[in-house]
Length: 278
Image 1 (cartoon, helix red, strand yellow):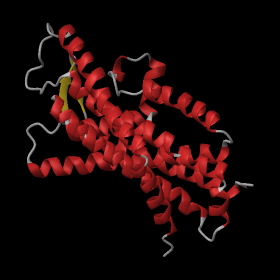
Image 2 (cartoon, one colour):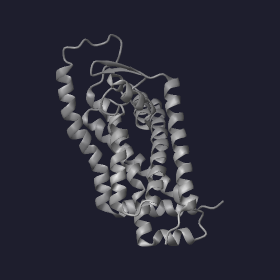
Image 3 (cartoon, one colour):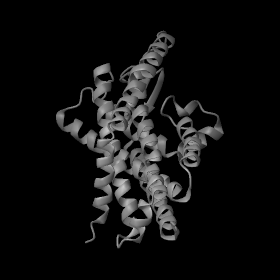
């Protein structure tokens, strides 16, 4: 079995660890989002919903817990979409030409970079969850140790499928673009519709019909739903609304993420097999 993708994976992870500024900012930035935006908005929502009646028999969680899943998903989205930038730098510095001319199958480049992005997302998600618990996020409340482990496994499955899909998309863009500025503009343009048509920051049920339809096919919505199901539970209320997730809905969300990752992999593979780097 050819294991060349492990070399690509290990090289990218070494770059991630050795660039201490990149490592520090990628770990601290999502925690700051939760600390500043999450805490500030939580206080506002608690004040606005203070007079609302609590739904009997349903666990109520604060906005900080609600947005905790959204911050994990948002961080995974940004990390994965910008993950392909390393390929663009390799192309501009001539390293990609040497890699493509080597006996290494081109598909291994995609797999190696995809695995490294998935590992980074796992590390960031763990940091956010630990920091969130310190801030008061009510993840895994009332869970047994076994339930926590099962929930963590489920969350990582969702994050893994999601990050692979967006990294493959980022890799296809990187191998197509010629300048970092152009790629940054395209990635920035992509993040806005994915982020603001999802349920990461607010309930999608109150969206206008068009945005609600976009939300149902948005991979970020499926990731957030999966994280909330495993971290908070199948039924809870927050900011005055009731949220329910059935096992069937969660399985459909996971299959949707797998399908998205599969389609993006085929697109990235198609681009890599036809690219010529001079």
